[in-house]
Image (cartoon, rainbow, N blue to C red):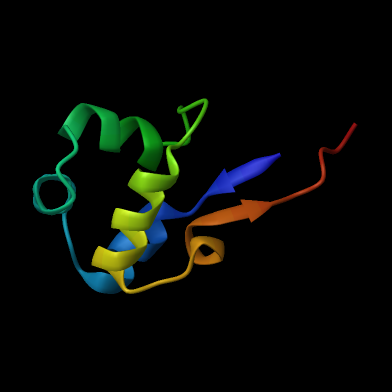
Length: 69
């Protein structure tokens, strides 16, 4: 299972949803979907813009955890 830690990175960088969405040229609705872990996919270009704006690595935003079955 892939865990999205975008909310954690946003809190660490003290940036809100509206400001980040504007800076990376993404709608607030789409960024909210990513932030809340509801997205099914992420484009590399979006991930690149997020990492650039948040000054982080992809692994700071995306995390893999084994499914507990």
